[in-house]
Amino acid sequence: MLAFFNDNFGRHLVEQTDDPVADARRALSSGHRMKKGGGPQRIASGWAIIRPAKSTMQFELAADGIEYSKQTRYEAFLAELENWDGTPRMFIEFAKRPVPVGNLFRTFDLRQVRICSPSGVETFDFTKAPEKDGCKTHKVLWKLKKGEK
Amino acid sequence: MDKLKITAHLLAPLVTGGGYMTLDGLLAALLFDRLHDVDAAHAAIPVRQTAGLLHASAAIMEPIRERVSFIAALRPTHSIDPDHVQKNKHGQLHRKFDTSLTNVMNSYAMLTAPTVTWYAEGDADRIGQLLAPVQFIGKRRAAGFGRVAQWQIEPDDLDGIEGTFGEPLRPVPVDMFKGDKTHPIVDAAWRPAYWNPIHRTACYAPT
Image (cartoon, rainbow over all chains, first blue to last red; front, side):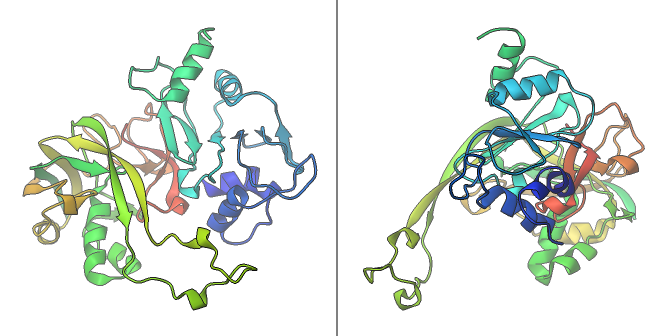
């Protein structure tokens, strides 16, 4: 799991060592050079979708090897789930607090989509409508899918 | 090694931070309390292993689920000597480093059910010896949650890996699972320590 994160995302941000947990933690919590210049900044907002080939994120870093997108997290997640090719993904929401390495999970199946964030992991079945007490991301994505605002 | 059904009869709701609560995880924690060595505790789990996969199921229960939060007041038993802390340019302590008195709120799932059941293939006597003194399971045990009235161990037909209909009873790596592969694949730790993301891989797991 950490090899997936580091190989497809983390290695573009930090030098890799023989400690995959420390490498992933540094990628998520240390400062990185920004595309706009200035001092290094930690990824403190936006989202990332990590794929086996090219990963995409919203926060514009100077790092090569990653695509950057201006879509909102929900637009990006919905597009990814609707165009699922069956290969693993990792969906991450960034916030002020770093995402703990323990909150990183891949998604392999639309019936068990996992959204990783600093506060925890949301898990939902994207093939079904959200239940009343379902998680926020599932409810928002389902509304977008149905064309509701 | 015997195929077993292990049941904890609960007197109070169980509080959990998530995860599959496998029997081997519980047994490893009990062994660690005695051995104080993680590797020794894992090696001593009295459950059959196949290529590192432990024949012990996740916790099976039909609970009423609620969320519950607790405030933990962190009060260290000793404080840091200020002489050992770097001062700012005015010669004062960096106050933002002073976290000696603080409260944190933790949120958990609270599961209310009469019983928790596990299936396993292991040494019934040894498992019984380890579980017999356990009066509380889960988190917030000191507050009375997860109180166990009785442990029951009886023979069964399941091996702790696959259920009657081929469903996964615990996280099993995709290449080791021989059951019903229509179940979704998830990222899950397949062996202890379950908290360690290094042990996470693509698995068939209970849903």
